[in-house]
Amino acid sequence: MKYIITIGREYGSGGRFIGKLVAEKLGIPFYDNELITEACKDSGLSPAILETFDEKTDGFFSAAGMYSYDMSLSQKVFLAQFEAIKKIASLGSAVIVGRCADYVLKDEPNLCSIFICAPMDQKIERAVEHYGLKKEKAENAIIKKDKKRKGYYNFYTDKDWGKASNYDMCINSKLGVDNCVNLIVQYVKERFGNE
Amino acid sequence: MKYIITIGREYGSGGRFIGKLVAEKLGIPFYDNELITEACKDSGLSPAILETFDEKTDGFFSAAGMYSYDMSLSQKVFLAQFEAIKKIASLGSAVIVGRCADYVLKDEPNLCSIFICAPMDQKIERAVEHYGLKKEKAENAIIKKDKKRKGYYNFYTDKDWGKASNYDMCINSKLGVDNCVNLIVQYVKERFGNE
Image (cartoon, rainbow over all chains, first blue to last red; front, side, top):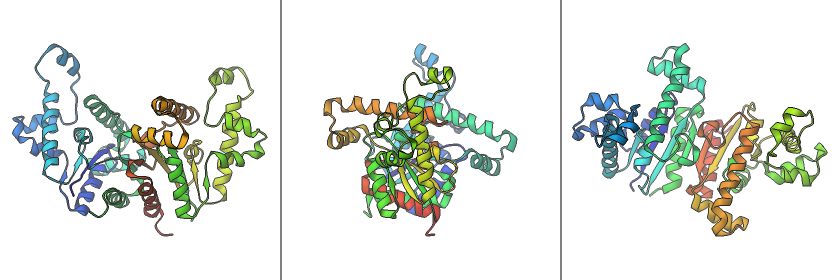
């Protein structure tokens, strides 16, 4: 049977990596920003623009939206991603990370929307190790990144990023990456049985 | 090994019932408001007062707190419950529902803090069936109840009720009560192994 797992995640929580491992364990495709950008190639937007405006709103969006029929670039990127995510979901089961995929696919019957968070000390550790952030600047950078993610999500959806009731399951990755993967696979089993 | 499972929950989400079944499945004691009230009997507060001020703040608390050394009744009830929850946790593994138990026990090494939410239509159904609410008034009553729970929790703790990052795991009970129970038991296994 077909099902879609979307992963929202705090920066440095390991959510993307957990999603990748879940996809491997379930034997279904995995889509993160690179692969969604790839799927946007029909939109006519250049890879540079897709990357620059990925999960970003531009500050003067609402003013531009009110006084002009022309869409801002960030809106165009959002819509290109929106179409790409719809197309990805139409192809079969998949794990999709970020980009409001849970909102885009909210009418998908077998949607499992997951959110991954983590304690700040573990997010700092991961950001230093994997994203090359300087330790003393990491906490501020993480707070800023998550503020942007929340802003982007809340702007384009009618929901509240990181609020438990928006999702089917939320896990704090202090449990350990492999244990989180097992738990998500278990969630899929509980929800859909062994169909 | 000893561990404590706390259950925060939206009104009508089935969280209390899920907690009861988890306790049965794991063979550990279960504490809800009745049993916490029972555990408060050493506090000197009457059962009527404990019940009236259970999970409630009184409106003029902060003013009273600023101008008087005397505690308000709701503060006294909170402190009595605080002590009772500490005592319960000292006795061994347990499942404890509500009363900011996750905050009271935040320094407990093997704390599993769980939050249960549910879609509004399912909360209405449950509230009508189990709590005798009238169908046409149920939604407003549920919103009001949860506003009070959030207010109580946010007032007494430094955290935000229902925000994923406050908890170890959050589950939307649209998954089904038994499936939620299985998933929480699985969480405990993933976290502590088969010790």
